[in-house]
Image (tube, rainbow, N blue to C red; front, side, top):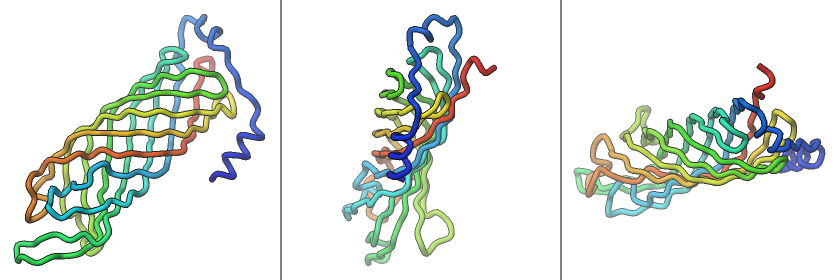
Length: 217
């Protein structure tokens, strides 16, 4: 992946669009479609609200989304984000009073809206924020169905850097942090103190965007 990105950086032609030219247009309605993948790690160190701590290992993270630009700098979009977080050999107290050890995976989705502010020409740094509905599940290796599920809401903030490798193609690297509140469907462990926890994630991702320019339609 790194070699491919470096090759594109070196061999790509410079796409530099003068923002003053864009601002002179009466209508600006470019569309952007984005897909990104990378690493995500849960903020919560005690999602099960138990006296037994655990250390999340992180896992796969992705974004699929689209956005519309009302100006050269400002855009509003919709997104579907997903994260997974592996917990190895987690011990929980059961109703029998002894400890069970199992590998668990926390799976989180984030479906919502976001706003982005972008500047620059070929290199395009940007800032973004968003809000979304966050459902999630706990999966275990020995069970075919989720052990538990939750629903919540999350707020996102982040920054990124894009590189226009063509007039209609952009590569990007982004770092995002989300924070929120969610409630388990039922008690997450026998000795749980509460059903409430933070479903937020820290993510770093590489992405590619395809643009549909307003002068194409």
